[in-house]
Length: 180
Image (cartoon, rainbow, N blue to C red; front, side, top):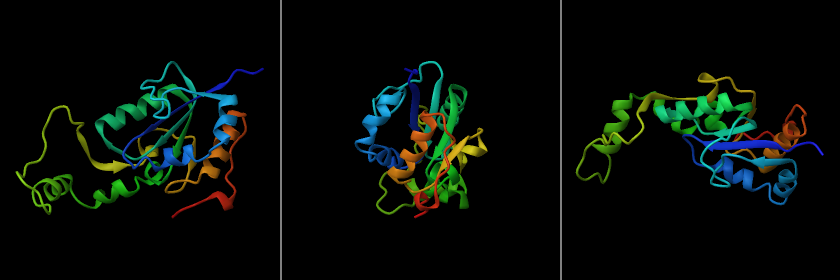
């Protein structure tokens, strides 16, 4: 029996909807676990990649220094890196702030926002430093595959994952492409 593939997943700036779609593969998750083990992932609550994994799935855009570090770590430790969902592919909803300056966004949220009391922009050194804009993954590291959708359907994720864990090149049929 061939050794199992290793899969790692993480979320950057996004809503976690892509991970919800991954869970929506339902009983096929058991079939996937016959072929692969999950390394770092919110699915198993493992917080670090152990060695090099075969497939890394990342959802979300890159909005802060911590995201940049984590994305580079994934690229360095994943043989295949997959951008999952619109935020990973384009920056998605978080990138709507790219039309305004970071200062303007922070002031609107923490100074002038509706219902704001004790107005001040958070400056705790524990908070990750925000970037001036939100970037799609491919503007920071090399990405091998993309799974479009917001979120991508469970069938699309299953199609890509089942191909990759069995060593095939995934090609999403048009019926599985979802852009809404």
